[in-house]
Length: 165
Image 1 (tube, rainbow, N blue to C red):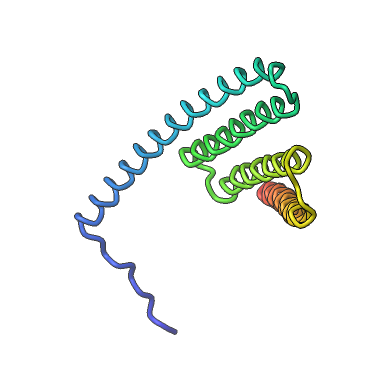
Image 2 (image 1 turned 45 degrees about the vertical axis):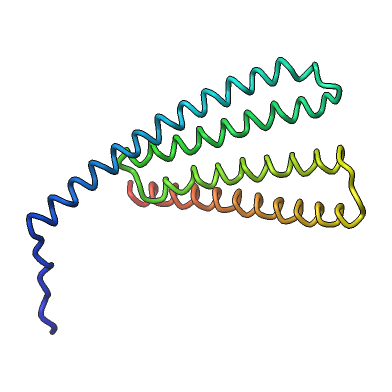
């Protein structure tokens, strides 16, 4: 039998630093949350402004793409804000991963929309079309992988709840 090791004794200075770092971390999270809220409000306002101007564009698709772009960015900000909210909550382990996955999915869908717009409205050479299609395939595969990861996380969470009760 091996003798049990006692956990290292922490000095008062260590504890003081840890407590103050945690306070500073909380303050920084609050500042980040406020910044995200303000940025989200600005992007939503800009999205509604773009929506009103969408009909004034010569190319209506460009106007619609600008509106979709603004609202997808707002959704990304909201998902990041949700992640900051989870940090303040007590349930922290696997739940914190899902909002990041959602932000990634939204960003990838946004990239797909922009790629599709560039292909249909830009000056495109056959070589460039090949590169666009390759990027679209990679982005599509990433979206499917992240959706699969989300499904697996939710399934794991259901299993944990079932075993806990």
